[in-house]
Amino acid sequence: MKIDIRKFLTGSSLLFAILSLIFLLFSSWYDGWWISPLTPEEGKILFKALSGSRAENQLEATVNYKSVEAFARTDDGREFYMLNLIKNKKEKDPNGVDLGGDASVDQRYTSVVFPLLFQRGCHPVLVSSPLSTFSLPAIEEEWDAIFVIRYRSRRDLFNIVTTEAFQKAWAHKLNTVEKTVVIPSSPILPGISLKWIFGLLLLVIGWLGHKFIKRQRRQGISRRNNP
Image (cartoon, rainbow, N blue to C red; front, side, top):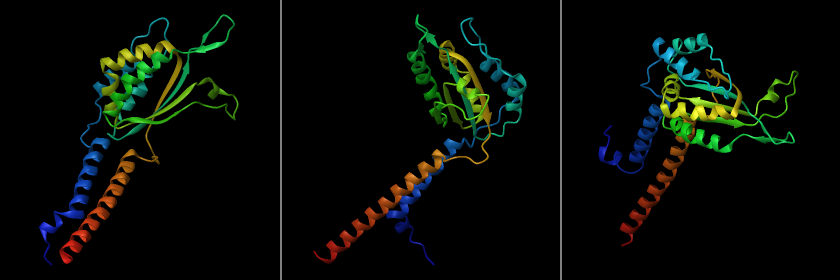
């Protein structure tokens, strides 16, 4: 059985080959195939970066050194999710009514951090405001916001939090935060992946392109048969 290379390199076959290559390149970037696990020394640097410096008017956050050390030591190079529980400081007027935090600080923080996330294949999965809890004690009601961030790898977290831009933005953000809890987790049953959404989009493009190519060929054949 002979394969006509010229026919393969034209039309729908070429289109699907190009789309497959695009998906392969995107997957390698999104999953970070080349990224190496953190070293114990980098775990110490990560601990210092997460601890940072705390001004008197900022929240007192204690970072568990053993947890950060184990986080680096058990790095498998795969993606993980970070749960962030945040309670904002409440500014009150003379009548005791909550005025909320400084929105400009949040915008400044996200304008710095989100680009650092996106360029490394990391992104928010869930951003929500908690409702009243069904259980007692109602500890969930203390939180004002819940974030779940997908990180491509633990090294990406390391590379983000050790940048000067992040450290400056986080210092400003701490001015509005009263309490925060950060919990990293490894996915057991991951949700919908952005990679597969992108792959589905490429399939749709391929299907539409295939239909268009077939129609163009039929029109070409029709013109040749009916000059």
